[in-house]
Picture 1 (cartoon, rainbow, N blue to C red):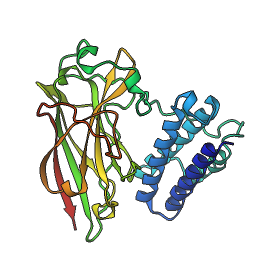
Picture 2: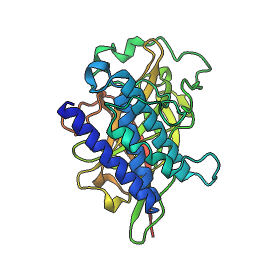
Picture 3: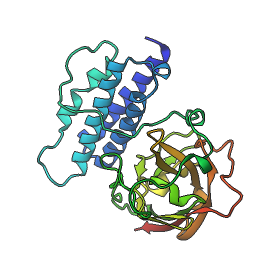
Length: 310
């Protein structure tokens, strides 16, 4: 086993145990956080290119199925209905499989399939596949000019999470994503925004959320009007954290979803009311080291913040 594979398995195992511990103790919000963050890491590894992965294709299929089970348990914890729940004792059966993924050769214990995600490209990989945005696409594709037909299961709904329970003296943040200004807004197909909270090293501090596909497009704007509930109290975020917004859209010619641009908001920008933030060129720079504005034109991401404090 390579050092890289050993390190990955140790991190995944620690995260898995942390999630099931929270789950056992009844700390459901924390368990959901841990399950969703781990599921996303597993899904990314399962979709990684052969040369960039420590695992075989069969191992990656098993990793993807474990990610699906984590999502199922997370959904069960958020559901008010008891039928068809994925139980904690079921999830715990997967820990030894994850730990021994390199030697595991039995049938997977649950009849699940990997979550059908859009193709995720590694940072920088898009640059080798794409031309300039301006002349690549010939139009908005099928449907009326203001419609965005969904191209993957669940794309219309997004993966938004409910607001956390309030705590005395603690502040929760709701961000309404109103609209984004783009010179070619009308040509974007299935546009949505991925919202994440990262520390200075680019590590996720909360579960990553995707908005539903945009409501409409009008002139140079793509309109969302969707609320994002930040999944951690503001006082509990680490110093230097930032909230990232990645604008993504589907490219039918290449059959993958591409990040077009991104924006971010730092902690000192958290205050009630409207805010507009600048757009930067991809790839998304979570460490905020080499930022390049998307355009000289006055185009921004328009947000409205609401703070909730007991």
